[in-house]
Image (cartoon, rainbow, N blue to C red; front, side, top):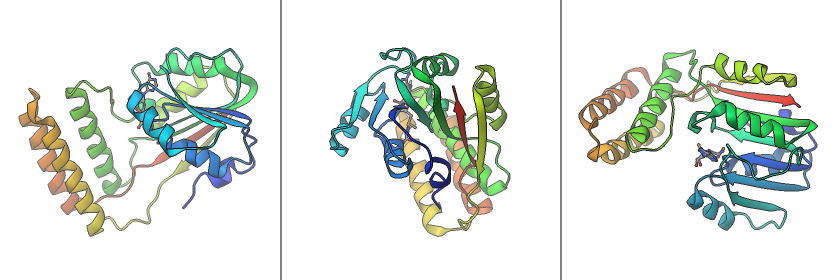
Length: 236
Ligand SMILES: C[S@@+](CC[C@H](N)C(=O)[O-])C[C@H]1O[C@@H](n2cnc3c(N)ncnc32)[C@H](O)[C@@H]1O
């Protein structure tokens, strides 16, 4: 299911900025779904991610720049559209990034957020939430900023605080996946193994490993479905 086509299909992108783009996953979604755009810029704090993104895209009007989202090196009101996908919970200072987003966006321009959240409605969705939070804790123990996913209300509140116009919320819950799908469960068991190995040197290793093993059991007992996603579109 393409959740973005109905939201972005009639939107004129103009000059677009994708914040915390990593390897340009959301740039791909924007190029494929926006009605049109003239130029796209993806920024990320990780040099490695930016190098991978540059090697993946070869269009002249799409560029990737290493940059801190807390201090965007762009003029005020220089983009028609700004997006951030799956990244709010990876930021050290969400309010500061949102202030910067608003500064570089033209009056009347669109801001798009797509973010998973932790208000799972089913036990199987909660398995993904708990798994995601556990990976975030492994990352944090390794010194990588990765917070628990936000509650839906939290990022709705962030949006309301900065005085955006025409805020629209689109909720998505993909319930089509069979919670006991063997291929998905095996893949996630592999993810747990990988993260137990990553945590091997940290002081909280024993506790993290025990939680990983509990998640193993939960996958088989309760099953798993994707986290709910909230897409927010607002105008400056
Ligand atoms: C989950 S990934 C992004 C996924 C991507 N947006 C997508 O939809 O495919 C989170 C990204 O946030 C980036 N990040 C974290 N803090 C940042 C900051 N202050 N400025 C820019 N990027 C940041 C990380 O380097 C990481 O690449």
